[in-house]
Amino acid sequence: MLKNTRVVLSKRPVGDATPDCFTVETVEVEPLLEGQIRVAVEYISVDAGTRTMLRGEGFHAQVDLGQTILAGGVGRIIESTVEGWDEGQAVRGGLGSQTIATVTPKMLEKVDDSVGSLSVYLGALGASTGVTAWIGIRNVAKPQPGDIFVVSAAAGAVGSIAGQIAKRDGATVIGIAGGNRKVTYLTERLGFDAAIDYKNEDVNARLRELAPDGINVFFDNVGGPVLDAVLDNLAMRARVIICGAISQYDDLDNVTGPSMYLRLAERQSVMEGFAFFHFPESIGPAAAELREWIDDGSLIMDEEILEGIERYPEALQFMFNGGNLGKLMVKAG
Image 1 (cartoon, rainbow, N blue to C red):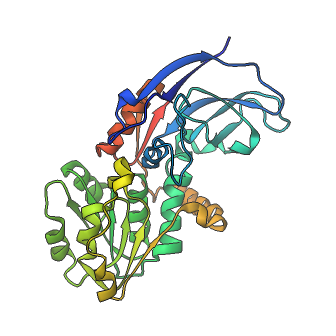
Image 2: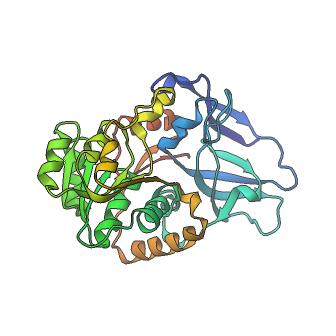
Image 3: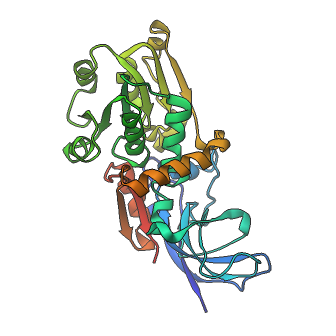
């Protein structure tokens, strides 16, 4: 009988979501019911937002104790009772952190497998990654030629693409990331104009040096002290875009808000948050343009992939420790 290996939540994290909060178990799958589809999962997305799903309450969907960790994934149909959803079809959706997903069509979308590895549908073409970056830049941040654009978590999946799009749109791009490896990556591989190592440099001082006339647009994925440092260096009529706050996700009951928010008033600036699903009309155009850039080689989206479903807990901790470049995934098989 077919077996599924899955990662389940065994205890709620307090602080870091360490591997001991999860259990990897193998179970026999039940016979497929009418209206169901079975998918062999190939790649599982590792996302910072997953940490907010482990609390038991919150804005995002929550994972119950003993439940498979919620996660986006891509794979191929291996069995189906639904007309039009045939064996071999590549699909993407909320497949969970497991090797075999039994789902309904409303949880899936068909994808084109001619792009190469299906992992691209979690990376550059992923809703929570490339599409989020595109929408954040084009619909919300709207950097103009000559703007000083700063992005935090700049070497990650969203930040790296957001910075590339802002550079494409004519902005001077400064990335903030942790460690010399990432700083070098941003300037030498992605073509950012400058990068700041928040682990080893004074972010406030470096921003004053790199942007003496102030920052026009900030695309924030981190929150905390990095957000405060940028707020202290805003230009007049600047735009601060809140995409995420990974520095706060381990303790959402004690979120540290920006202490420098009065700079918004002093400099007639605005702060705005967003999520990609707030702009459903832009998801299609975002995916189409991202695909064009992938095809012509002008968009770089590196992937870091850990092999084996049992490494999902390790991968989640790896992300929160700032280890990955580009999109982090687990190869399920």
